[in-house]
Length: 292
Image (cartoon, rainbow, N blue to C red; front, top):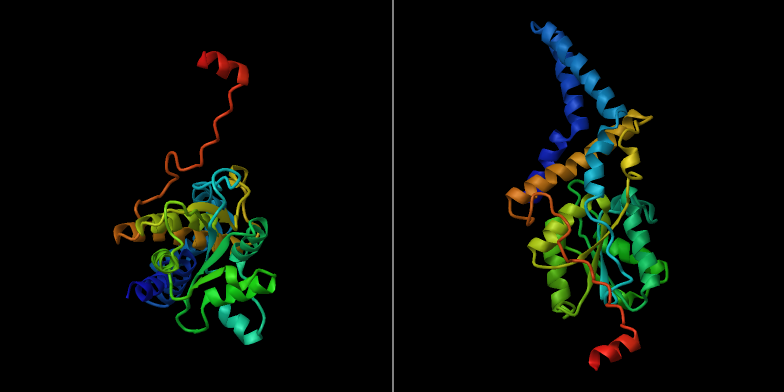
């Protein structure tokens, strides 16, 4: 029920749709007794369209999300047991219709998984994602991602598929269950989470709430960093898209928190979560003097 309600409400609440509904309402009111208010609403919708579409607002919203979790240090600590790739990087219904892989803006998730699989040939790749569409049913995102990774030369025996989840909370819960069945969890196992940088805070909160400690490996950055804080957009459509995406994450963080799906309103890196550097070896002479 949560999945369907969230999809429906978000359609009406996303900023681009709200502006369109305001414009429609104002246009209708112009032809009624409330014409003066209709003109005001139309003017407000036009103003919001320009501000949201061309100003740096989208970057202001996304920067705190993208900067929240730095990448874990894979050069320290034990080798990763595996990498968890969250779905959402494909347009599955289009790919199936065209019989060709069809990546979207989050396609970096799959690209990065392939690069890390090459870098760590002994590590597994767990892929989490079912069919999260409402009106265009297709096969699972996990299957699509697995097909792409296999085509890139990654051995199918290294892939672990979780193909039932439809949102981030289910990603965490069902991936933990799938890996647990395969006895791939434990204090000696190290799992690294791959997802979009702006989505990482919500994802980390969900995995922590599920009792599954993972390390972040954010990808799919939409900004260069603080230097983009005042960079405007040159297309209204791009600004609207950025604001929609960032607002979805902020609303998702709040909604997941009040419904108990994450462990914090704005999850942050935990103190001492990074792998410590190995102690420096003492010079033999000093060690000998201490022993004496």
